[in-house]
Image 1 (cartoon, protein in one colour):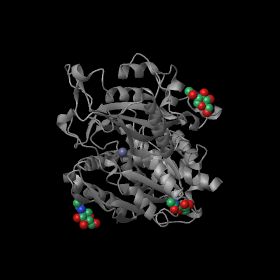
Image 2 (cartoon, helix red, strand yellow; image 1 turned 45 degrees about the horizontal axis):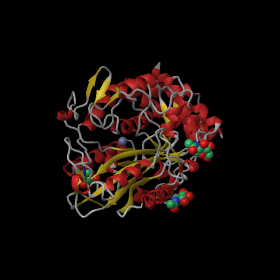
Image 3 (tube, helix red, strand yellow; image 1 turned 60 degrees about the vertical axis):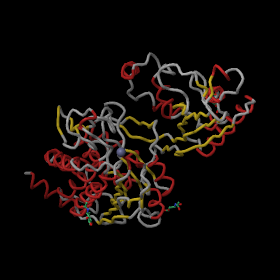
Image 4 (cartoon, protein in one colour; image 1 turned 180 degrees about the vertical axis):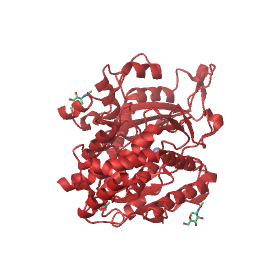
Amino acid sequence: MAEILLAVIMLLHLSSSSSSSLPTSTVLDPLFLYIDEHQNEFVQRLGEWVAVKSDSSHRVHWGDIHRILNMTADRIKEMGGQVEFADIGTQQLSDGESLARPPVLLAQFERDPNKPTLCIYGHVDVQPAKKEDGWATDPYTLTELNGNLYGRGATDNKGPVLAWLHAVETYRATKQEVPVNLKFIIEGLEEIGSDGLDELTRQRNESFFSDVDYIVISDNVWVSRKPALTYGTRGSSYFFVEVEGPKLDLHSGVFGGSVHEPMTDMIALLGSLLDHTGKILVPGINESVAPLTEEEKKLYKDIHFDIEEMKKAIEVKSFLQDNKEEILMARWRYPSLSIHGIEGAFSDSGSKTVIPRRVIGKFSIRQVPNMEPSVVERQVKEHLQEVFAKQKSPNSLKVTTSVSAKPWVANLNDPLYIAGRKAVKLVFGEEPELIREGSTIPIANNFQEVTGKRVMMLPIGGHDDGEHSQNEKISRYNFIQGTKLFAAFFYELSKLQKDQ
Ligand SMILES: *[C@@H]1O[C@H](CO)[C@@H](O)[C@H](O)[C@H]1NC(C)=O
Ligand SMILES: *[C@@H]1O[C@H](CO)[C@@H](O)[C@H](O)[C@H]1NC(C)=O
Ligand SMILES: *[C@@H]1O[C@H](CO)[C@@H](O)[C@H](O)[C@H]1NC(C)=O
Ligand SMILES: [Zn+2]
């Protein structure tokens, strides 16, 4: 019976130029069946990938990054794709030496000009992990417990990369044409900042990226038990405020009351940045925030977020806002300023009576559309200089910045998001939560800015996967349903293109 069905599918397939004109179930049912039947193989392959210690933070493991990139390339070649290892130069290491960076893997499959072209980004390096750090199982031995697959890289990002490859494999194994043109860009230095990737993207803008229509990234997680689509990330600027005074640290008993203390200046400077409600007091910042529309406001209603549960999880008595919508907006669509520390200030236990001669305050501002990091940095510097001038202090002030990442937001009415929503509905039987990330993930904005292509983040990891943490995992359910989601997404994207 199954053979007859398959033959019918193939006949139908041959008689129409694309599978996208077939009823959805005819296309997807055999794919989903294949994925269910081959899930143990898929999990086993994830185990082989997790076993490779491709920890990019230690150079001793960079050979393993080459190895996992080769394994990725081999799978793509087995499926008929073409691969190229793009050289991205050398990395200056903290010990002063420089080392050739692992290449970026660029891959593509046979191109049909009638199909949309999707480029998938992923990374195969991981964060460090040691059993002694408090893992319940060996981090490099994928271990299944209660439906969860524990291992470093299981969710960030080896599982999702494999799920994409398995989705392609599934089309081929069930003798269906993949309904979109596919390209892959897979890197091995994401966890230490993706150095070299932005430049490569620029270099290949006119070649590799020129025929790409859409870019999809699956390198984040859901925010609740419900599936999600991510349409925004916050940008960030990091500030160092240095106040320098006397030549030496001074004794407060001797000099206290007679000198302008750098710490006093610092407290005034840091205290001028925001008020007790979290409102940023630097002039100009609030005004540049994109206004909230009624349509956008509605998006927050349906997101599952339990205030009480979150209060318990992080042991706080209250949040700055008192309802779900406002808390989520404060995290995702408004800027925030956090003070991180004061270098040079006495911070040990005990009661040393020193007047520090030089202190460096550190804070960062998470940014949202339509803020521009270079403008924010200028506004902050001007504000601090103005506050400092009022202090009439003889000390010197210096404000510098590092990390400058732009915020990113996508258009939810883009075909990419419509296809993503339909695919989620098909596989999970419910609409995805439309979410943003409060943290800074420069990749989406970098791709969008350089290539001008539409970008979507389509996570398959669960909210409790613990990326970067001990006991990182992906559930078998998310890994396997995620593979179906990607297969269905190819189909929905091609169908949408056809329908337009
Ligand atoms: C990866 O493959 C390249 C050839 O494509 C080979 O030169 C290199 O030795 C391989 N590296 C590892 C670590 O397997
Ligand atoms: C921020 O600016 C908007 C106008 O762009 C204004 O309506 C709002 O009251 C301001 N909020 C604060 C906290 O100053
Ligand atoms: C990259 O190429 C696209 C056309 O595919 C173009 O619109 C865009 O401006 C280019 N980006 C840069 C940085 O040159
Ligand atoms: Zn990641």
